[in-house]
Image 1 (cartoon, rainbow, N blue to C red):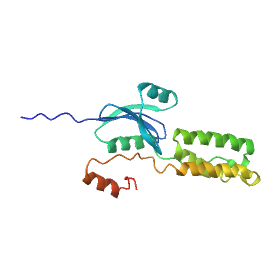
Image 2: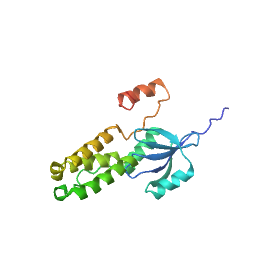
Image 3: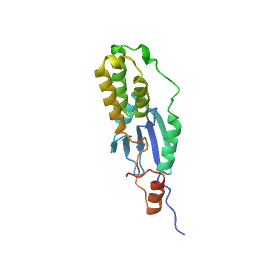
Image 4: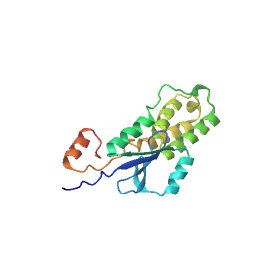
Length: 174
C-alpha cells in the first residue's frame, strides 16, 4: 500500500486592497512579493509586516493551485469602481499637481487600475488647456500605466495540457 503525500499548498498571505500587488507563500514555503510589471521576488516576514502597516490586507489563506489563489485575490479586490467621478472642472493648477503626485504614488504602489481610471477623469480638467505642462504630466503618467499589462501574475504551467489552456485564456506571455 503506497501512501500519497499531502498536496503542497500555496498561500495568499497579504494583498493591497486593489489586488494588484500581493504576497504569497509558494509550495516550498518561500514568501514572494508579486507586483505588476515586476518579477516576483523573495521577501521576509518583516516585509509582510511593513506591507500590512502600509495598508495591505492580511489574508493567510491556503490554496491547492495558483488559479484558486488568483480567483480569491480578484474576489477580494472586487470590481474597479467606475461610477465614482471627481469634479475636475473646478481644479486649479495646484490641486491638479497634488492629485497627480498622489496618482504617481499609486502607480508606484501597484494600484494601476485606480490610477488609470482617475487619470482619464483628470483629462477632463479645463486647467490642462491653460497649463500644457500639466497635460504633459498626465500623458506621462498614463504611459507609465501602460507598462502594466495585467493584474494577473503569469505562472508557468506545469505541463503542455495546462500551457495550452492558459494560452486559450490569454494568460501566457506573448
